Image 1 (cartoon, rainbow, N blue to C red):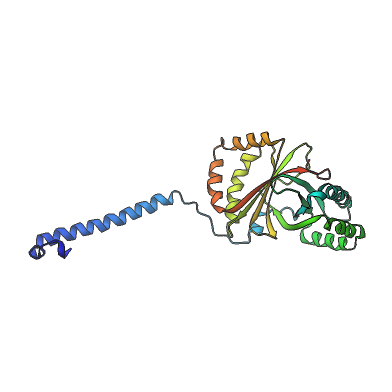
Image 2 (tube, rainbow, N blue to C red; image 1 turned 135 degrees about the vertical axis):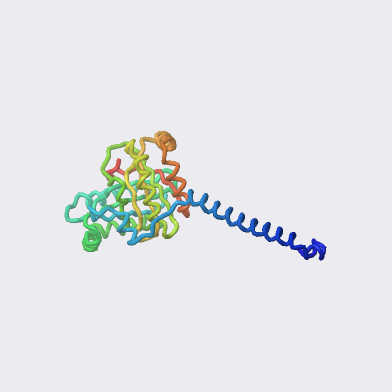
Length: 280
């Protein structure tokens, strides 16, 4: 500043007073703009309450103690038919045997998505004790052990996850067919499961009018911060129409706006049920 003004002008009290007033006004105005921006921005900030418990306790159903297991089997392409036949026989026996506290909820082959893959969804009524009981009994089941041996020769890879169902989703119920099923899988950023649940608890009603909502789950063991949504449609065209109709409902866009930033990755599978599946 000194280089811009002649030295004699800095000796003027009037000029110094005007300079101080201008500088003070500029600083005050700058602070006011920052406060205004902060106030304006706060209107659009989606605040999430600090959680006080594990998300498995906050988001799961309290009235039931069911656990779910989802299996993914990548099958050798030339073995898929033999795998389906072998699996359907054994899965039905386990499902019908009251001595095993487990039931097959859904069993599918992928149609679009990862090819030559089987997806199985099991329900264990009674939580971890029921799951442990079933596993111990299977270790002693010679027929099941032989089934696993034969199956292993048909597989390229496999993995599973232990899941809980969201409290605000309807429990998967047997349904007649024919239907196609979509498994939408969301890999969330760590620490965002509560926010995801808060938004979907309000939004699920937009997707239940046509009975397309089958079940919603989140992982406890395996890949973590993973969400699975299962939907049923008559065909691909009805899927297209149902998903488009959701955008015409006030509030659906808000759910998408707030949940998309929580996602690291996502994928979709279109699946065809096997004969043993209770979801047809």
